[in-house]
Amino acid sequence: MGRPATKEATDVQALADSGKTRTAAIRCLMSRRLAGLLARQRFPRYRAAFGYGSAVIPQRSTAAPALVDAVLCVDDARAWHAANVLRNPAHYSWLKTLGPAAIATAQATYPGVYYNVTSELKYGVVATADLHRDLDAWTSLYVAGRLQKPVVWVASDAALSAAVTRNLRAALGAALLSFRPGHFFDERELFAAIANLSYGGDVRFALRAEDPRKVRNIVEGGLGRFRTLYGPHVQVAIAAGALVRGDFGLMVRDAAWCLAHVPETLRGAARAGRLSGALRSLVRFSSAAQTLKGALTAGPARAVGYARRKLLKGSGYPS
Image 1 (cartoon, rainbow, N blue to C red):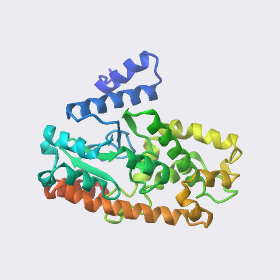
Image 2: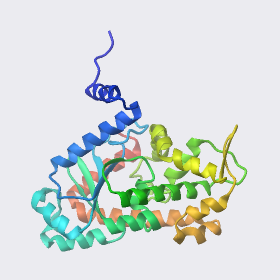
Image 3: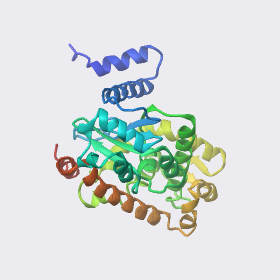
């Protein structure tokens, strides 16, 4: 006799029976669960929200994720935090005693995200305007980088969806520029290059606060999701003659197409062959800034607890 089906497997099968593919069914189930978790927090209205990380998108890892990671996009940070402090005062550190203006100022400080940590959720808050700037200009790659990898959306709008699409196309262009002309590569190498855009230079790896196998785990655990996310963009590149698919894999044919899709602020570095170094510097600065800011916004006790979990994760021990 086989093992009894888990509730998750039963839910996925029910969605599959309704006509969805298994991949779509799993994505729908994850979105429902994340939406339920966010709804239980009684958050004020937000424009968009997505979940990311191993608790939302399964990765090739033996460590059990402790927290769900999410980002909320809001139009007016000060008004949003003022309402959220009233609804969820326990989410905030001592900073709430300074008022919503101080919290909004902390959020606006580079790279423009404010995180709260609860017992089951770590959520960042980003202003709509700041998110659009990061998606189009890679001002920090802090949120844009997370949106270059598979995520689970709970809410969005047309303008944000269009910006996310441009960000994905830019990520493909930048990743393709990392391969030598005439060199064949497979889809795993391509997806690893994309994932590494926002991880190369991340100070958490130097601090051993992140799993050194993270990029590999993300790609191997989410290969199908990467194909769904980037398949249409790869086809556009092939149709434009920028990319060739042959018996030995993929090969870049037209670097100019790739360059044209990299954010304008980074094209000079790309033309000079310094794009990788420029991105590593950008990620190093934004990740260091957010790490320091996190200690302030989370409060000492939560910061230490969260850092301990990340250090254990980076060392390969269960948390």
